[in-house]
Structure formats: structure tokens, C-alpha cells
Image (tube, rainbow, N blue to C red; front, side, top):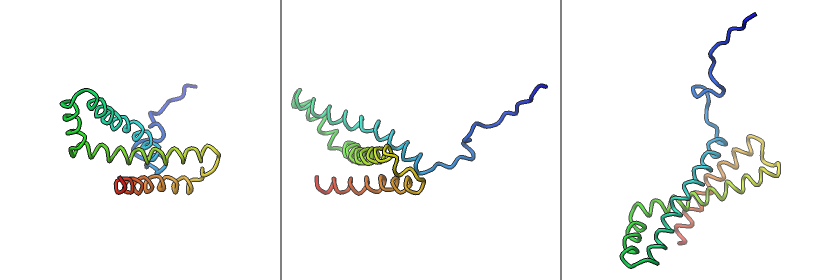
Length: 126
């Protein structure tokens, strides 16, 4: 007997899937990890320009101290704190603890709120 196959959406389908905090924070961890490369490249360029010539340093310093440089460096500080806290959360999960949905969501909020607070404190101190 031949079975007829119906074209059904793959699970979870985009139309019915509601993003959860744990999936969002997981994606954000990957984004911040990759985003840190941009800030690192900007600082490395600044350091290399300082070693090359006064003209090169002046250009790099102008970019680094512009609104764009301030934005990239501020977001890099936030990404660094977020990525660090998310890493600690994953280390905690690796011990088999905090895997309950309620606890995992609390840890997700702790990463988000903690990274913002630590970023503000870093900006104030530095």
C-alpha cells in the first residue's frame, strides 16, 4: 500500500515558534564572540599605526576617538562582559546545575543585566 506524504513544515516552524530567552542568549553569545573581533581589529590597527608613523597614528586615533570609534569600543566592552558572563553560565551548566527552565532563564537575565551594569561601571571607572 502506497503512503501519501503530506508536505508539512519542519519543526519548529517559523510561523509558530516563539523565541525563548535561552535561545536568544545563546545566539547573542555567538554574535558577541564574533563582534569582539571588530573591536580587537580596531585597537590593533591603532597600536600598529602608533608604531608606524605619526601620520598613520593620527588617522587611526581620529577614527578611534570619533563617534564611530566610541560606539565600537563601548559595544566591545559590553560584548566582552556579556561573553564572559555567558561563559561562566555555560561552565555552571557543564556541572549539571542550573538546567531547569526557570533557573536557565534567571541566568540569562543575569547575563544581560549584569553585562549592562558592568559596562556602565567600566565606562565610569575608565
